[in-house]
Length: 147
Image (cartoon, rainbow, N blue to C red; front, side, top):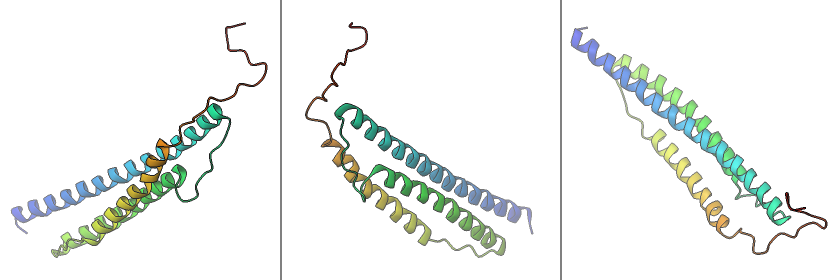
């Protein structure tokens, strides 16, 4: 193998590694967003209980915990797909018959688009969940510093 051929092969492997790292960053972002969304939903529910003394019904299909968990699962799946794709491309580079795969791109794009669509009701529903009445104060309640 010539020096130019070795350099080209090395460049191909480095590009494969950069692509793998980009997929890992994407999966870490999804996992982080999933955790944040799930915890923010819990915070919002607790905040609603404190301010209104009432708990709004939790929709089974549209809630922040489910969306957060879905993002975490999608992130974990992307880690696995990234590792599989990295190994596949590595073998193809070594054998000299690289074949690009559009299936993985379409699959991940579809999953992320679906999760984005599922998050729309959370955003839309959050606009209508502001309390319309002030919470009632328990009897004998004295604000701090006023007695």
